[in-house]
Amino acid sequence: MAEKEILLVYDKDCPLCDKYCHLVRIKKTVGELKIINARDSSEVMREITDLGLDIDQGMVLKMDGSVYYGSDAIHVLALIGSRSGFFNRINFWMFRSKRISKITYPLMRAGRNLLLKILRKTKINNLDKQNNSRF
Image (cartoon, helix red, strand yellow):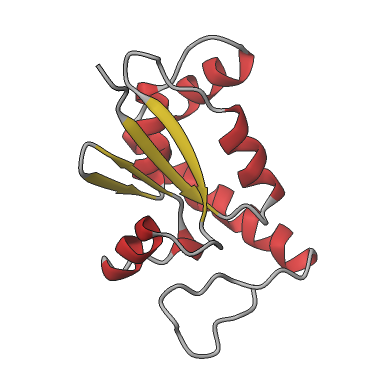
């Protein structure tokens, strides 16, 4: 049987997001995690844009036809995540609660936005909002 593909879409230009996405592991029984740079044109990015999701405000996890955004994405990742290794155990502990995920995700996003501002990165702006190119 072919493994189920689970897509994680994030901003590769963010060093923190990139590190997180390369460290997070999911249980082999769940499927194969494929990470996708939101700055590259792709079918899943078109779908995210069509759904009206601002990728600059949250990562997206697509699994079994469902799309999880921001705090929901990180929460689902924790639930389907492997518990092997220090990082993945901490990830599970921190984000297994939907309530805690909803509280901590905006704080992490604010830190990410500050870091990208310091690094002088531009926003992805997948929704083509006017005057929305800088953090």
